[in-house]
Image 1 (tube, rainbow, N blue to C red):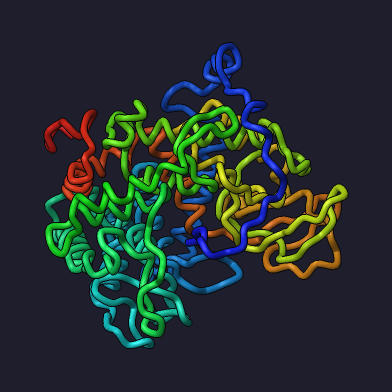
Image 2 (image 1 turned 90 degrees about the horizontal axis):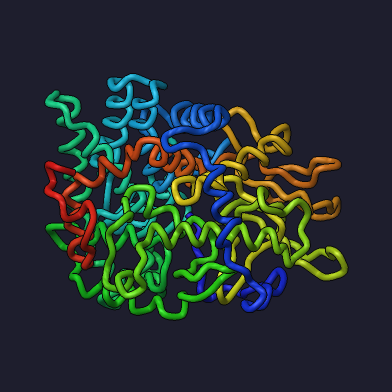
Length: 487
């Protein structure tokens, strides 16, 4: 998955509006939006079509022999371990929605977990799938061995493990096959050497490679690593201590502030406000930091979603089609790496990049990712549903295909001389991706189901790793105070 590189050159697509000019959505406007939201547990028919197509991407493009979900398709044939985690989460969703039988899901999950349990681990640079319980970010689809020079990725391993633990808890029947899933999941999670990645304790390092050793960056600030820390705190062997959570949250300070009318803990691309919430129900539970702010992380993500919409309405960069129902910046494909003149100023267009709106930086080249809005559905359905419906209505012929929304599109990109990294030019439209990405498909399906039935959240509330990790991090309140059986 993509993340911000602290050493990377920063670029502001356009200056944000002065904070004094940012107007929070309150009063009548907010009331009207909430009144227009679909009733709890319901969505327009379009969303069922999106769910069916998105699920089909995981089910039909993942090799049945290994369960190694592809990073993207159709352009590449490399596995992303994070995409595997989202795929494992998708299969029980498919069972609940009636797309596949429970037995079909059991077989697919078992194949996947057998692969990861049996795949070779070790420090050698070639032929290995992982080391010390961690896994390489990208794997060769046919062999499952490390792909090129990819790193042992702590966050991508966490996303894989989240999917594994979800299946471990969901498949709870007393049958040999479901019993095997639980046993395999315990083995895979249990052998992760969490403390080994605390090379600069108590923080967790971004990763390791045989050639370069430990990556020089640790997980600090507010971002998707919330899930990683919870999983590391929830371990019973080689775990990290509670001081790691305190050390991590103490770096939040510079990320809290007012952004486009919403005071919240900011992170520029929306995936950082979505990934941990895919598996953990943060409604009503709070750590020390959020108790001090008198909100929870769920409310924080709701505010981040509203801030992105407000940014699109303000549209300081003057990009085409941005507005109240066309918005969504996150990590996604883009058309190219090139500087081009746009409305009288030089703009930098990017290929795959983490786009977003933050207090300190804006990464925006006019590229919209439908997953950014769609995966925020549980946080703010009153603004997400109209956005998804309108983008499908206006652009669906170009941006919606066999497996749902293509990863991204850019109607402002109209440059015939720029070499494309991804996608294609569409005369009279702009640029549109032609790939589906697993880490963007996955949150769409899982978060839609969380909004409708709470499936993933309800299941993971009963998982001892999640409960233990949250409590060691200092979370209290809500469902976390209930007994495991009640949950």
